[in-house]
Image 1 (cartoon, rainbow, N blue to C red):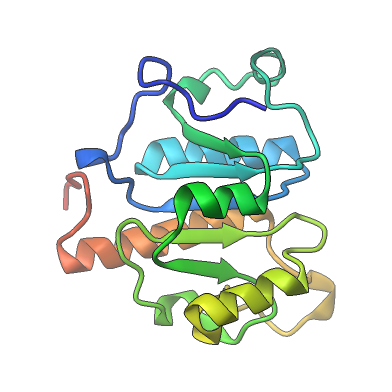
Image 2: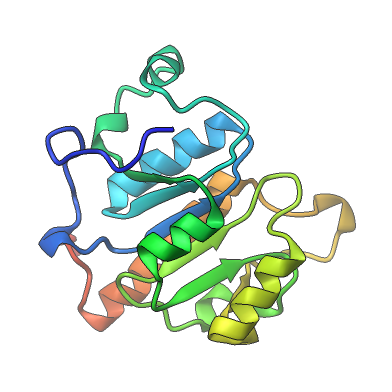
Length: 185
């Protein structure tokens, strides 16, 4: 595990030190998804949090082998466990993205610095995490990316879901005039 990178190794895109959003991956299993989410984080001024255990190696050698030549731009923090993440980060506002919700992401008032929690690719987050989110923030902090009612579709790819959610959040920040970096209209 590679904890928080030092400032020389990971240039931060987010202005004023606070990232646009914190993308939180709880026990990710597929390295390509985490790599794609890292690229999204770098391109949007977000911080990526990867919570162990994970299903792959995130060491420098593995990143080079995977061709992640942009990883030095990713503000990535690794956490040994969910409990370690909570102790270190103590998120004031957190949103759980899950298929087990009814509130669409565009109905959530996302704010700069919010934590966006995504579960593992095969099963999402466990029931204990759902209960924790409900107890800490309320059931309205569980969000869904609406899809047509075709059971075989199940859910979206993790990297796709993270990108959609981040960009909805950036749209809201832009509308509120609080986007942390300039965008040409």
